Image (cartoon, rainbow, N blue to C red; front, top):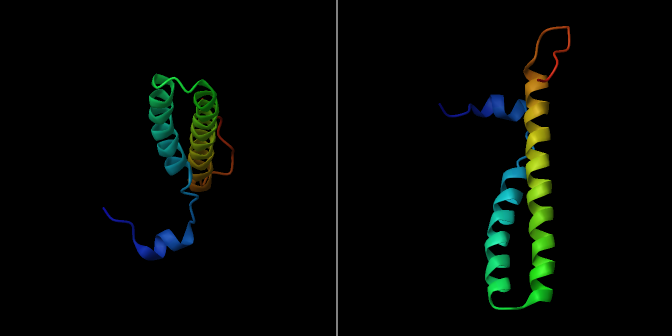
Length: 82
């Protein structure tokens, strides 16, 4: 089902995590190509950029998922994450 506009306007989401992770995956592929051509300095820099993009993308997405799960919780007692 498609999201209804009135409901999606009430609950803003931070949708930057998945694009960051996707750019990180593309960056990993570029890093492998750069390393294959023998540019070790650029390969180290792009490997670092790949790791940072993946790290931030995944951690932002996990934080958003946890925030969304807690905002949907209507009980008064907080639940533990397992």
